[in-house]
Length: 482
Image (cartoon, rainbow, N blue to C red):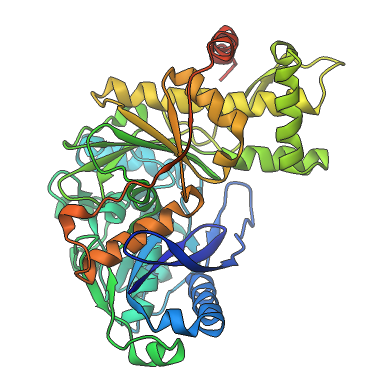
């Protein structure tokens, strides 16, 4: 018996075939491009996600036909916040404004004026990345699309529609539309009215671990899979990643260092913190919520630095480690790497990076240190904002591409002054979480056993010397101009 965990990310699609014990047996991936036609714009067409998904499943069917025959369910994880507007024939009407699209800034103020308490009812204060401000922007700039729209889905919901022919969403992702009352987990007619959207144009809601339809017969035949296998409701990528690393109990937390950085903290109660731009939605585990503090540019910052210096990211990381080992890090400049705005805690989408302390002796290693440290400081800001809302941090796991950088992880352990765990399989966390939801949908695993904690590959303890160094520079970081 195997399960397919599919993650529809911003930069690509990945699928992993795992057994009930979360052991990976095969995987495939396909990259996706992002369209950035103007500064602050970030779009993708849903057909790109489906083309990448079919390419991934085609590859698995070609290379592992025997494994595909053993798959009993498909689970989904997906990039969040991008509203997919489809017509009556289930076809997407336009490119989707992604989670890091900034153009709906003015609409945020309008929405806040219309619904003053919206941050306490939905997943956070209005932000250009969230769904409702995007709908207001689309109504102004793409009225024909809005007029023809018959339903609003989220990215992984659209993929489930392609798999099954069924329209549905679930609370973890639906929270990002700002049309959902997060405490009750139901669509809210008053919120819909505030953005001019019809309640009838929203899909039915199911639980993340419930079946959201069955795989079409034509696709099962194409991929040599069993006919009629369930496709789970799935979850937003932050929830799926947290679940894949076993974070399902109050106080469990996962720090994901990917294109963006996210601090996810599980709590049994809905504890919003809109005044500090913390997002709070239902978790993919029963009777729980996930608080998310967001850093808009994490590995994206290092990618930018690598691009302008002509150096590989991995080489930059080694240079920064050498800098610390040689005791030269204290002379590095101080950086706020908000190259794509600030969400938590300042909620300034139009903010840009700031750098202080450049000298003729500043080299690539010191610049890299400044970026790594700056992102770590921003993640600390997130944790402090979430703690101020009454959330507690008991355990910390680190995932995402940045988790391959030992110095970055050690910075976080030292700044947060507690051990951090690098779990086995952390690069596949979102896929593992999606597969776990599939296991429940297929009735292979009871919902009470939804979480599966992987073994720790490494545990990093705080480094007192590094902590002293970082704290001595933190005040300079906080003093950077807005």
